[in-house]
Image 1: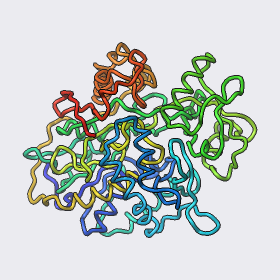
Image 2 (image 1 turned 30 degrees about the horizontal axis):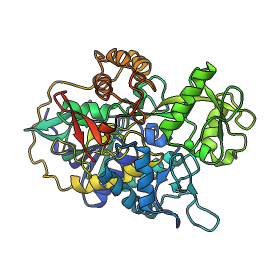
Image 3 (image 1 turned 60 degrees about the vertical axis):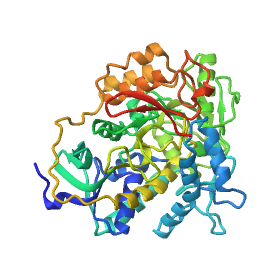
Image 4 (image 1 turned 90 degrees about the vertical axis):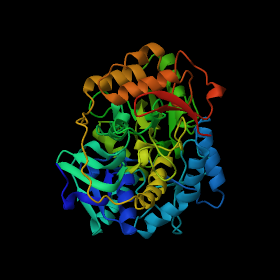
Length: 483
């Protein structure tokens, strides 16, 4: 079925979280005609639930070079230095763009921005809105900007089921309602942490973008690196996995073992805190540790305290059980510094993309900053792509199918916070493409580094510093040194 003129645009954006909304807004701001495709209403995106903030060197005693040093240290020898430089240099301007667009960040009594501290950061540089409600505030404001633009058409409750290609070039997406074509297609579909049964993410975070891109021939990278957030609520039932933001530890909450003793540095990078918790759980023969938030003001983190109250817990009176849960996939669609993938006409931004910024372990709150820095760059680059005049894309016949509960269970059991060669091999035949690709990448990396922990290969291999595992469109694996 050929697309109608109404289903053609200069830029097609798939995904309406922070990265997608921002890319659409910036492309329209620069004069582009945009169609924004969203599988769910905006309030169900992962960005909407984000409790962290935006990291940027804004304080007088901070600097982009210091922010870069913290990012590189957290990334465990795998960050792409070019991507780090872009982020730390351009993050302050991204925050100023948001403020100019009406975004209200938390401020001090003197009117300056209130800057928070999170794990791995050596300076206060985290900008929040409403304490731990930053994601909601951001997506609300961006949605207003998108809704007010006459250059953006939003298609909500519409799923992309494959990418459209013509002569090796991406020319749009096939949705369940029909084809939508464009000179450039930007995937901003979010992450894949909900592939794991125990997760902090909404169930829709299943890695759809990397699967769509891979099936269209795009390279993927770093799929073995899923960050497991140290402090997710450990409570069987519907509330299990509820995120307890790192910012709470930044304000003084402590981690306690079964005997009530503090056992680790709460503000170490996330991979280090996760390992410390796993070691403590093993030593105490328990399935959780405790986070003591009794000295934290509830009004500082209203949605966290409210969520715990809904779960029947009172963090003002008792420590809360927590354990690691899948939180953020560092890997994704390989892109350059302008969001361009290895398939002409196809771009990716946000968590579905892989610039190499995060390395083996994402520094807290760099991800929202990444959405805005690289989203702006992708919007500009997308507008330079040639317009599609009379495309007659031929869908391959393959269409996307979401993972089953069986896949999610298998991912947690076999590719969770601690993996082995034997456990990973159990995933190789999984029917969901990304599960098998994650397992193959994790098998290829015969070491433990950052968020990738191999119980049978417990030490890092210095020879793999800067080496990224690449999955080609035909499924072959290779290694590339990005620096």
